[in-house]
Length: 109
Image (cartoon, rainbow, N blue to C red; front, side, top):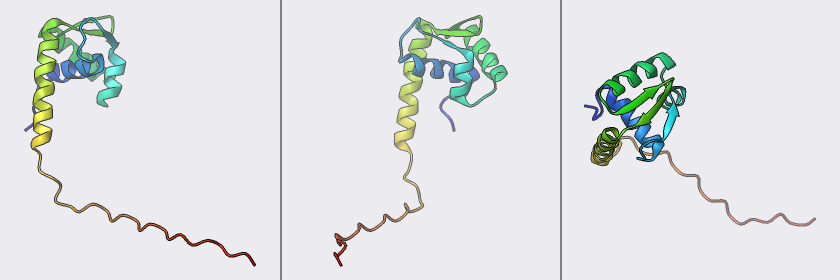
């Protein structure tokens, strides 16, 4: 099950990651949409949800992390990092590595 479940949390974590955890650093919603790989309209809806939750400020297609968003972002980051560390290693084997070349030199005729 994913750690981040709501659109507001997804937006908060994206802004927190881009801002490096710093409050009052703004980003365009289009930048967040590109980062998340979603349409601008979806990112805008997520920004509205996060603003209603008090995690970000949303003005003129720009989002800024709030103090509450900073606290929530740090919690979400810790949860995501812990969840990724708990994952089992892949059951598939990695691709074999190429053998190193021998040191043959070309002979002079």
